[in-house]
Amino acid sequence: MRAFASRFRMAQERAASSVHGTAFPVISIGSVKSAGASTLALTIASASASTRTPVFLIDAGNTHDLSTWASKPGKPIQIEVAKCEKTNQLAGLVREGIERRAVVIIDAGTRPEVLRAATRLAATVLIPLRFSPLSAFAAALTDQLLATELEGTTKRRCFVATAIAQIPSRIARAVEAEVERSTTERFPVGLAQRAAYEAPFMFGGTLFTLSDDTAPGIARAQDEARAMAANLGVLHSAGSILASRIADTIRHDRRVAA
Ligand SMILES: Nc1ncnc2c1ncn2[C@@H]1O[C@H](COP(=O)(O)OP(=O)(O)O)[C@@H](O)[C@H]1O
Ligand SMILES: [Mg+2]
Image 1 (cartoon, protein in one colour):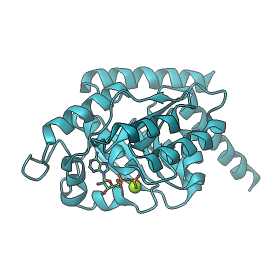
Image 2: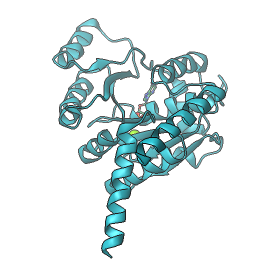
Image 3: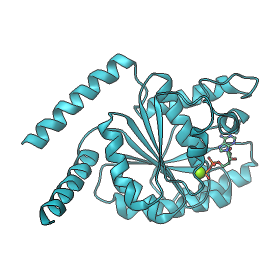
């Protein structure tokens, strides 16, 4: 019994070190208020998958929208969706994604406990921010909530603007005032308000498999998705990603052996 317990602990520590210590892309997305986390997660995953990069999408969101999406037709074979029902399953799922050499994207939803756990496991933390004062308030709150988890780490944390619509400049200023106290990075690419982003959730498939008839504005949405994924380093040609994964694996195995 004790042997099992200590083996289990070792496996957990290994999981943690392989998450924090190597360049495996693990991205956590969420905010204490619904602000486009699932849309952002699927958009980044879709751009990655369109370059034949395997993606392990962990659905820890409250309403499991990504699991519902996965049950619809048109899911690319490169995207696997794993449902996470309990916070204590999250580390194991991240480990599974890393073992598959996949880009791991966690939809952490809105629950603070899940957001914290996902932040501990991720290398990059994205806080979606709808450009409205209430959403900005929630994003600032999320930023504070996660600050303690990120202290002393080199993890990247960003506000990402989602569903960007034309709003009066007075409101834009109020939004900016809400988040300006934080030094957290503003992600250089956002998602405009476009029907194309909603289409995959309605019809299944992705921005890279649907057509403009079903997903109006799809070409611009694809551009945003690609730019976002490129900035996160999860958009590669099949050849270069294979080479970098092999290098990562060798480095990781050496570190484990040392
Ligand atoms: N860029 C966007 N353009 C249009 N609609 C969007 C966009 N981002 C999110 N939405 C819509 O906003 C709603 C909430 O988005 P969702 O991704 O489910 O947020 P969360 O996962 O944070 O609850 C959904 O109906 C979604 O389709
Ligand atoms: Mg969601």
